[in-house]
Length: 212
Image (cartoon, rainbow, N blue to C red; front, side):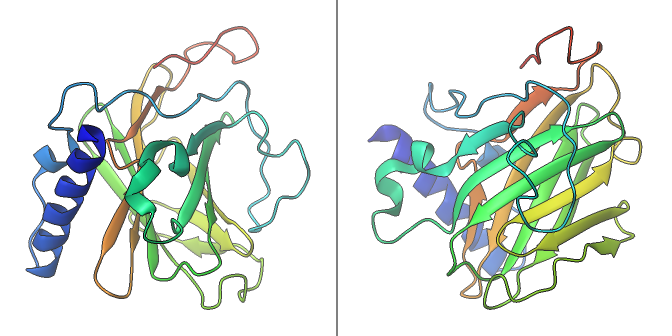
């Protein structure tokens, strides 16, 4: 499969750069094969009301979030074993960006939530994973840099960061990607074919749809 080969090839090159201590070129985030960048996620349908505690507080907490299914993208790429991350959910209220990651119990390492805005500024928000997963307390951890954000890790990973600090305003295009730095030096990126793209709405979500 050309798409899967494209993803694996670029993933291995990124890992080579990481192993030699150099930053991978931005071109490695762009698919080589035309058509490999087809959208693999849905978009949020309403504002979220999230309690950052690493748990699904209630059924509706993430129901309106955008959703990326890792299995739908990778297909045969992970036949050697289960993918470490199964889903990424994302959305907003009027003050915060929220990201949720559903991980396999065997997931280890450091999760990195990467947020890029239209001006090219990228914020990387690390989340160290406890071992075993779910061993941490559900209380949110407050982190002051690179922008103030909070996260909690229990059965799921939940993260929140302020829209103002991220320079996200109505009409801002946002790129979102999650990386997992594993103990063996391997780095996995989700989505592998390119970041999630969405635009923060200029009007109330109750009156309009999100746009790509």
